[in-house]
Structures are given as structure tokens and as C-alpha cells.
Length: 518
Image (cartoon, rainbow, N blue to C red; front, side):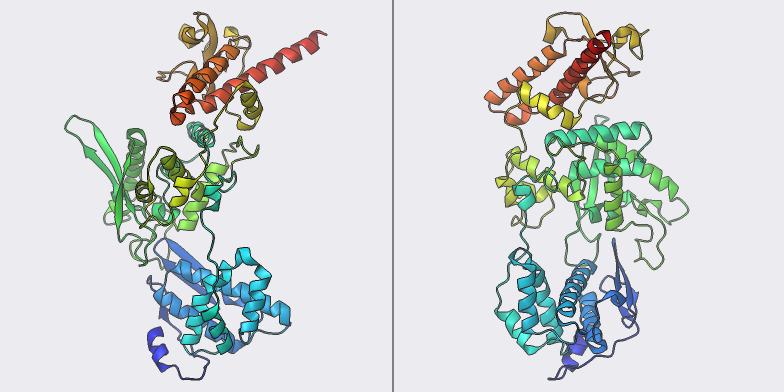
């Protein structure tokens, strides 16, 4: 008997159900509803519910709770099921603490007391639970008083406030600034070059920073989703068939949306995908069906997802890789707080700053409509309006943008015997005198010395004209700001902070010398 059949069988009086020993969730998981430990897997989502961890409840009430959750398991996603379980668990714990007795029934008084206890800011907890409790009663199950159903139909509860972190540019949970994002990108590249970040995590983090999609979408990716088109002129175009995640059905790969990649990132992803395909040759009939970010073989997984990581695991891999970089935020003076959602917010915010409207932002973030993207258009710009020398000096120690090594002069350079390692800045200083060294072996196509200050191979000289470089960059920024192009003007903001940091390091070194001489 399915949950829908049980609705028809419900009598006018609440009853305590008898649970089946075997049931199938909407996503295909088979489990035992009588057990106190439910394990469900749905594509890239995995869920475990521990009923033995509930506060003290009457056995019949517990069975009714399970029966209602069973209906949700058969008709809704595992994420929604988990939300209902934990929201109700908090309500039961509240009643148990207030009454000092096992929970037997939820009444209107319980709901009103709970609403008062959680406060107006968390009223959405009860709002999220309202449909579940009414479904519980509609199934004819024991445990929900009629007075509670009447109250829920009359209450006007506030939903969860959305977009606050984005609208306020929250420095901990909101969008990243350009300086923060560039710092993470630079640190990630450096860590990968030192073999401190695995290639899978490196690719995953770059895709997150570039596309801002949800972890569940990356978890659902397969090798075959990496598309390389060979153009007639010999060039290559790279794209991803990105699975769409926020859908009402349980098929994580039921619909796709193409996402173009830059040539550099595209080549990286394509090379990595080829390595994964080779690894799965012999394990799968078609190794192109291998997950792009594989995990261990999962027993009882949904067909086609045996080696796929869950969305939670993908999120954890992103956090672990990014947090290991220990990049500082110029806004907080602490390590940048890493959650996948911040990169998604950053994509939306940057698109709005560049003048794109709600339709474009909704497309970028894979929203089915524009009701949740207005906050990006109305949010506060992440660009610092003015950076002068004083501001740069104040922010420099927090941003830690300088990644190189301060040296005395050419004799201390890593490549002191190579004349090509010397860096000059005639456009800035008006002189052809050397000012710094480069420790990098091989060709570098970046503009010297502006791009050098944030490079790990940069070796600025103690008596180099770094003050002149700072003045030049600030003046150029002010000129571009006056022209009305704030996005272009802010391109070198992190470099400005790196130059300011070098100036401070030089001043500290000279002061130390003076103390030694004295």
C-alpha cells in the first residue's frame, strides 16, 4: 500500500499506523520505515535519519511521525525530507523541555509557545513546518490536534529572509570583493604549483570561481559533459554541459545547460577529464560515463551514480582546499570564510556591477525565474570608491597581497647570474635603472612591473622606487574613476595593496638597520 492509498484508507478518527518493512523513496532508495535508522540516496544527495536521537516521544506518536515522513520520502526530495525531520525534531525538543513529559500530541498552544520562543526572526522555521504538520493531519494519523490544524490555516507566518548577506555585502557570508577573489585565485595557483592542492580540487575550485554553480551540479557532472569543439581555424572551444540542480524531480541529470569556459580553464578541465576517463577504463562499460569528480564506489547507489560524490562531499572538498590556502580578507583582517554559496553570490554581484539585468543574472545562476535575483541588481557595489596612499597603507597588512621576497639587491636574487631576471620600469620612473628581480624560470607574458608585485616569484629590491610605482597606480586609478569606468579602475586594486605592503616591509627593514647601527 502506497502513502496515497493510506490517505484514502484513513478514518475520520486519528489512528496509529502500521509501517511497512520495505519502501522505496522517490529517488529510488529502498529502506525499512520500521527501522530507527533510515538511509536514503538520491542521485548526488545522501541522507541518514536517526529516530533514536529524537527527544522522548510516545511510540504511537513516533510511528505517525515516521508515516508522514514516509509520504514525503515517496513524494519529495531527500533535501526536503531532511528539512522536515530536523525542523520537527526541534519542535518536539521544545515541547519536551517545557512539559517535562514524553511528546504525545502537538496542539495549538504548543505552536504558539514555540513561535514566541524562536522569535520573529526565526518564524520561518514554523512556516517551513506548517505544510508538513497539516499533511500529517490530512493523512488521518494520530499526533496533531485539530486545534493545531485550525491555527496553522489562520496564521500568517513570515518566510525565510533571502538575500540579506548579498544586499549588505556581508564580509563573512556575502559576496567576495575583487581583491578577495583575486587573492584566492593567486593562492590557489601557487598551492597547486607546489603540489599542495590535488588536481581534482584545483579544477573544481576554478570551475566554482568561474561559473558559481551549486555543489550538487558539480557532483552530477560526468566526463562526457566536457565538450571540446575543434574550430576550422585550428582553435578549440571548451564548454560544460552543466546538470541543472534545483528541479522538482529527483533526476540530477534530467536537464542540462551549456556553459562556455575560457580557453585556459577549458584546456585544464579537458586534460583533467581525459585523465579521469583513463582511470575508469575497465571499471565502466563506457569510461566517459565516469563522474568528473569521482569518489569511492557506493553500495546501493542509484544506477549511474555508483562512483559519484554527494553534494555535501563536493562542498567539503571545496572548503578544505580553499581554507588550506589561509588567504586573508582586507575587510575582516582574518582568513576568508569559505562556503560555496559566496562564489555564487560573487558571480551575481559582479554581473550586476557590469550592468547586466535580472534576466542575464538569472541565466548565469541557473534560476528558473527572476524572483530571487533582484537583490544583486540593488546590492551595494563591491568596488572601493577611493584608494589613496593612506587607505592603501591601512589595508595592505590585512590583504597580504605581496607574495614574493624582499631582497637587498641583485646579488641576493634567485637568478643573480641571469641578466634577464632584472626588472625595470622606465614608463613609471622615467629611468632605465633596475628596481627588482624575477625568480621565475621561463617566459612570462605579464606586464612588468605592475603584475609582478602579486607574483610569488617577485623579488623587489630594498631601495627600489616602490613609492613611485604606488603613486603611478593610484593616479591611474583616479583617472579611470573620473572617466566613469569603475570596473577598469579597480583592476589593479590588489596590486596597489601589494606595492603598499612592499613599501612597509622596506621601511621596517631600514628601521631595523638603524637600530642595529645605533
